[in-house]
Length: 415
Ligand SMILES: *Cc1c(COP(=O)(O)O)cnc(C)c1O
Image (cartoon, rainbow, N blue to C red; front, side, top):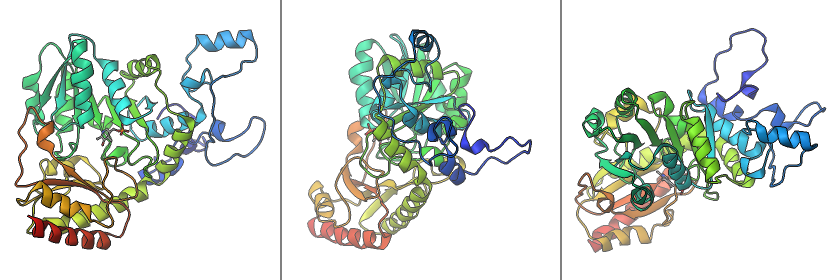
């Protein structure tokens, strides 16, 4: 929890109250009375409103001087440092990760990843990067970190405790993404973070797929958890926003880095993300159920070689997913049995209920041709045929399955 005064704290009546369960917490997180009520008036509104600001007006010169000299976190100081709209969202995200000290918000998930990496690395350091990382994360390492003299070494997502063999005196940070982008390998996060802690190595994780609702990264030893809130937190495909949540030890570095880079998010976008957060629980449950239904149906089809879904046995790291995660979400990949690019396009092009697009996590279903082998360097990725990544939205899974059945018929006719 970050600071007192949270709505969920309840009245201090001396009774020991159990911590609210995750769904209850989602309805209450980030709702402090000082953000929803007016000074001197009783009562208040439910949601912290949109506070737009650049200039903050001070009472007098003494106030101005005092404000500049103290901690500006969650205080009105300058528009770039945020207003209660963003603080409320950040507070809610912090409170979803036990062990977290604070959350910084960014204009996109990529900005959050870049800034979190810059917060912990300096020239001469080595970074261990999971080979199944989101491609723009790799791009940042190659095109930004490398010229700064920071070396990135890619590792097998299934490496587990074997990661210790890659440690050198220069190893400063390990970046995890679990499950991996496009290929969904689940990593042994507790094994890796335990070894990292022993050596004073910082761990960062891209937790976009599970969100803190289904995987609490800091509880599993991660130091900084990054989310592309653009995806499931917003949930409606209409806002770009990212977050990074850190432990007390890493919080000052993360915060300074975000401030120095001038990173922030607009209050309107923070407000939409906070609105999305309230329904994260019901949406993810529905994404999970629909995706499992579609994935299981695909797994039984002769045209399909493999379904890469962490909750299905056979996906690399499935047992780790069962051990560490409390749910699965709507995004997974399947590979086809043979077939050409053209046959894959025939499958995708005429789907009636799936859009063709990259950014997932909205209420709508998506189908995307993916070629994971292109984004690998430490491991070799091969499949029996082309791969398709699906995002299962909130539609009726029966309609999606019928749509895919017709798509597979087109694939057969073209292959
Ligand atoms: C989309 C995505 C990002 C980047 O988020 P943006 O908000 O689009 O910049 C980062 N990591 C993963 C796993 C993603 O899917």
